[in-house]
Amino acid sequence: MQVKITSKRQVTFPKRVLDELGVGPGDRLELVASAQGFLLRPRRIDHSLLGTLGDKISNTHPPFDIRAFRDRREQGHGPSVRD
Image (tube, rainbow, N blue to C red; front, side, top):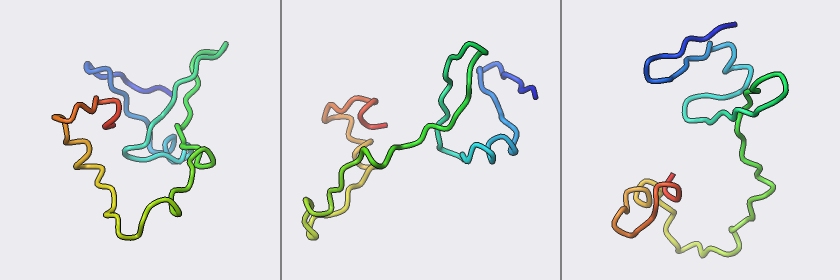
């Protein structure tokens, strides 16, 4: 199977490939170097590494607004923290 690289170095994968990988818009893919070339695999969050915060956050605390956090450029949060 071949895919075309655009002038902006973007690639469109066939729907069948993305369906088999179980990814969709906004998901990330990881390229892993191997002896045969590069392997493409979905980048998944390992939920077992995330601690539960349910017992540490009060029910009266407002929910976290990720959009507002990303828009706070004046507070010195770098792009790697916001994204």
